[in-house]
Image (cartoon, rainbow, N blue to C red; front, side):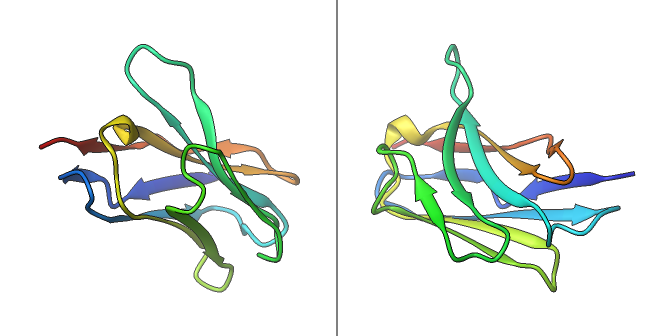
Length: 115
């Protein structure tokens, strides 16, 4: 069964950093574009960052551009999201998604930014 499992979330103070992990099982992420999305309380899910299958093309939402870096290691079947200078408004559940040959959503990992 194809699955994506996110980890690395937690509580952090404003200005802090977190590295989120998305590990795939049951399928190979290589042929797929991968992306991170988030959903804050009371808001719709939104795209945070995306990366093409080779890692050569990356894009970011305006909210996180300059503070986030998406990367992937196809050999490890894992996608990463490095978030720096976290803000209160970054508080959300962060989801990983594969698209292309196979569409799969993870269950999410909670990031809480509070002082």
